Length: 92
Image (cartoon, rainbow, N blue to C red):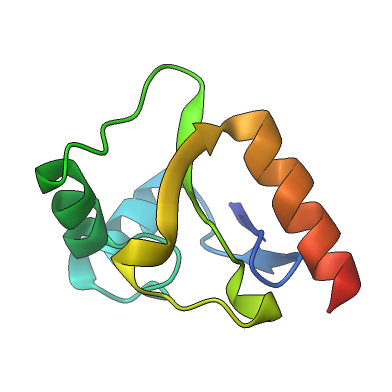
């Protein structure tokens, strides 16, 4: 399995297959920036629920000086996320 790291604009090896990925996830062995359940829970307590076709993204991408704090996260369409993060990774 390959992970598209939109923060760094890079493809990264995540696991050999889906079962291996879930084992790594359960063991807490994946990069915490890939999937952060605590951040998801915090966003949902603030009523930042996702609509179909949306994902969470940074208002100011960290590669451009934005923080990893929940205050810098918002729900946007997946297409907007990839456009913003693609442009940010090229600006880095």
